[in-house]
Image (cartoon, rainbow, N blue to C red):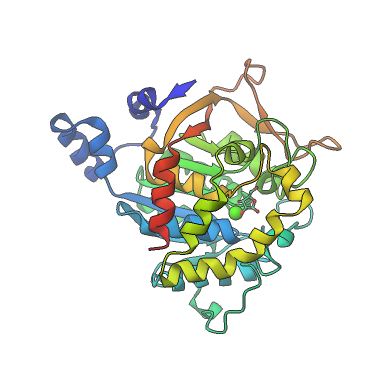
Length: 359
Ligand code: BDR
Ligand code: CA
């Protein structure tokens, strides 16, 4: 078990990068301030990899509302919907937040092996609830540079400072580390929504969507990114769900962002009532914004109050288990690197961050 108190103390030893001048400045100041106060004051450079469905949109909006976050860019990958839709949706979300100056990069349209799957049943065919948007930004706004190259460039330009948040199939991240194996050592941390801990799938019997959509990529990332890694797995997000009452209050805020969210979220709210979804949701009904948990943890490290710390990998074969995350609680894998698997989070803080996202 890895409590919040332990986390603060272990964080420095966890890192494997050379502190930048800016970080050294903050470390020098830390003798005058409580450790947690210093760290939460620091501006966080985030790079976010999405397959922009509705919860990715919620996560992006949560990050944009956080006072301490500098969003360096958003990279897009296949997943909930086609890559074209993902790119368009990301631009739509940034437009809704008047943040179209943030660069958006187009990444991989397919997994490393096999064909794409999507989650149109839940997110809508277009990934954002099939809600008409006649003023959607044009794809010309995308950067010319590809997502994989952008990840490598941005991390290398900011060694030790970038927190990478992945809320999608991990294809872009896997390709990036194959092209630049030094990448993980230069990250401040990696936060992933994906995988599962109790073999409960939401896409296959044992597979969570982001890992099932590209098992090879998930395998590469969990093995090659030897940096502090935090996982918001499927069952954890289900156990940490919010109430529909909260969702109603959240969407009823009198702002353009809340009206945008209410439009794009309606399809998923309807889908959540289906018998199949009710079975998937582990532990009863409620509002689950899966990707927002990984984002909230990246934005505020005090968000995680309890986590496990184990080596993890991904099953690549098996009729029913391909794409399932494997947690090595005993040490069979002889892997030195361990991931932080979120177990409990500060849900009051989460509600505040979610509310702020639509203000
Ligand atoms: C994950 O799958 C996608 O549908 C969601 O956006 C989230 O990233 C949940 O399993
Ligand atoms: Ca996602």
